[in-house]
Image (cartoon, rainbow, N blue to C red):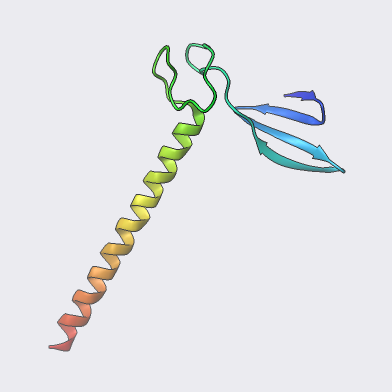
Length: 90
């Protein structure tokens, strides 16, 4: 944890900004690869040197998987609901 220019760096791309006594979380850009420590270009999703995904890319993949799972469960429940209504109407 480092303090510099009104911010406290928490590592892993997170930092706290101290403004008027209130600490707010801000996202910082990842500049080095976690695996090989090589320099990353701005906005990179993968390391050019070793192919490791950046933390931002990993978060986006996790988020998309959660959305897909929730969507699949909702569609399954809707289909089961319609099947139940059709079954009990006869």
